Image 1 (cartoon, one colour):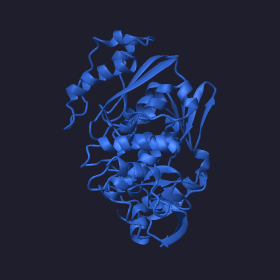
Image 2 (cartoon, one colour):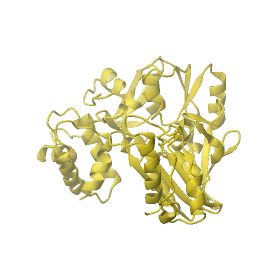
Image 3 (cartoon, chains in turn orange, blue):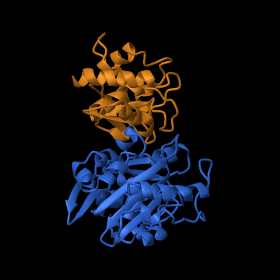
Image 4 (cartoon, chains in turn blue, red):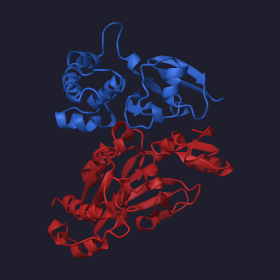
Amino acid sequence: MPAVKMTVNGKKVSGNVEGRTLLVQFLREHLGLTGTHVGCDTSQCGACTVHVNGRAMKSCTLLALHVEGAEVLTIEGLATGDKLHPMQEAFREHHALQCGFCTPGMVMSAIGIVNDHKELDEKTIRHQLEGNICRCTGYHNIVEAIGAAHKTMRG
Amino acid sequence: MYDFNYQRASSVADATTKHKAAEDARFLAGGMTLLPVLKQRLDQPSDVVDLADVKDLVGISEENGAIVIKAMTKHHDVEHSDLVKSKIPALAELAGTIGDPMVRNRGTIGGSLANSDPAASYPSAVLAMNATIHTDQRTIAADDFFQGMFTTALEPGELITKVSFPIPTKAGYKHFPNPASRFPIVGAFVAQTKDGTRVAITGAGPCAFRVPEFEKALGSAFDPAKIKDVKVSADGLNTDIHASAEYRAHLINVMARRAMGG
């Protein structure tokens, strides 16, 4: 089986995978990083969102070999010890989750949205969240949390 | 997904050589269509040739009055390109409506065009602006490129390298998104070019197509009032659970007028 190397949450990792092994399978099954979820497995729900070289992407629709040598950031790589990332803190503060299944992908997408936008209004947040599905919250508090985190992160 | 032999190409020549040597290979660009197709076992290639390392397939430039976008350029980079935003703002706007941010961070213009999905957005821009598609072997005019559902003029193993869009005087894109998938139920790109105003539609038929009735009524004008009463036939248009052919025919007129600010 081909070997693959990448950096995940700042640590160099490697493994042997099949050509068809998805990035999300490599993260969850080879590295035990089960914070990244598989919701639909059809690139619609966004629960599997991680960052590859600083860009939000759906890890269920990427081959592990496709991101050879890349820097990957998952939900596990956000907090520093007990100190939450500002986006995680905003999700907690604004009660932006209920069951929590979509949350890892929501948080990773949300950070991508803040990174991509100097200015951010509610309409833009809602448009940019089109790739993430939540069936509990009705989105309202997620939108609030992203707006609040934008202020903290962009200061 | 059935397993396959994964190969990485280092250049265009390396990619086409690897493709040719394999029994039944597919090029992998962003993978936003190929991977879902493989996951559903709708295709079973012997080899996948990944273009991720082919650096000379990425970039946007202005050359001789045209915006040239290389095949592996991501939708996100077209959406946020200062050059595209200043020269063909409608094209940047179109790129920003494709899929969602994660898809735009991965999906490529070359992949989208090679696939010719009936509801893909880019084909309407390529047709309306009379763009030229460059491959490793030749150049193909937009009018000759799209041939049917998931069917293009590309030969097996032929690789799109770049697309050249002559800068139009004016252009606009508007689409009516499917409420769930956000794919265009109907999308209209209208461009005022040196050869007259061209109107191209996506989402409504087997592949993107021009609307001669609208183009005749418009001449070289960019004026929604000129097509207000021009009807489009529903013959041959798509009917599915989202919209009937008749509704799509109606939307073609509405979206084309909105693309011109009407």
